[in-house]
Length: 376
Image (cartoon, rainbow, N blue to C red; front, side, top):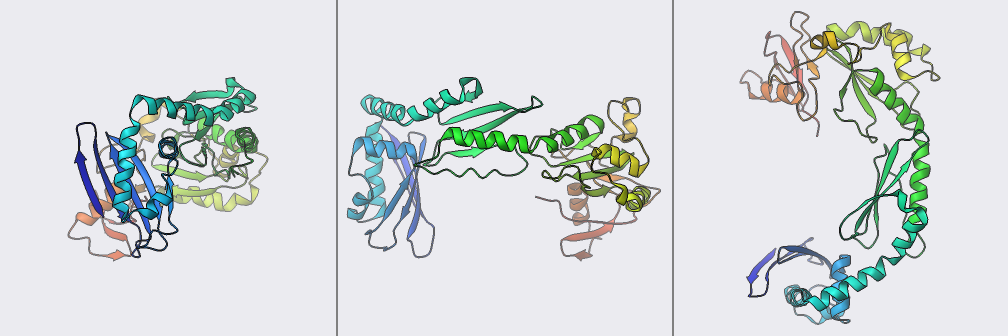
């Protein structure tokens, strides 16, 4: 990798050139000029010759190159003796572009490029525009579904193709064709997908309102799981299928084997009676023969349901509650996976391993306990 840093009376700049393969036919270049980053991606299929090269740059850098020199493109790179020489010439161009006249040219160019977007927002409705950043490279469009839940479509215009993102449980395939696609079409796709997940969000809202949700601490519309409290030191992780939210979900019991055994057996004995016409909470209460605890109804006995890790003495670690419990019925202490895994790894007595799984003794009762490594 080639690095260079230079300071002049008018500008301070540095650049790095990074070959991405052994043949040195693909390069990434990072330019830093007066604290601003510019990125180039160079393809040189005939290296060390620069014939047939391709220069890919950001929208802003392409605007600078277009406004300052019509010939400043891959043809100039072909005539340079090295990638470094090309980058040096590009640095001079960008430095010169910081003059006031060039800023005006860039703003005029930007106004032309975004005129169609402004027209489309006008057609969508300005009341649908939630926010926009200072240079109009990021906008947020909103819509309210049939139950008046607000949803946001994030749009970024930093690259050649706009980027779209949402807080949906599944990634939406926004296929953008440069010559034919419009922002209105993408917004309509967003609205259609929003209606598709109405049953899913209704199911998750019901879990949030009727159960004691331990994780995620601050659920988003993207999250497809809930970890709920069932009994003291017993919790249940429920993974809901966004496309079929009322069928029997994927469940994982968390707690000591002694504590969860009865609950697990009840589910196994009655799973055939699951009725997809009923809410998940109603089905769980029927199968478990209990009333699911909620934080609102259990405030008087909250201490018995709140689980604290007996290694770090906190309830949450990186947003997660303790989910590993000692199987000794006379102990039943709970631990964060990360805390227990690191504890067992640090002990000299912990010599047995099975893959990444470690085995050792419970920090409290010395009974055998094992732990898988924490997830990413």
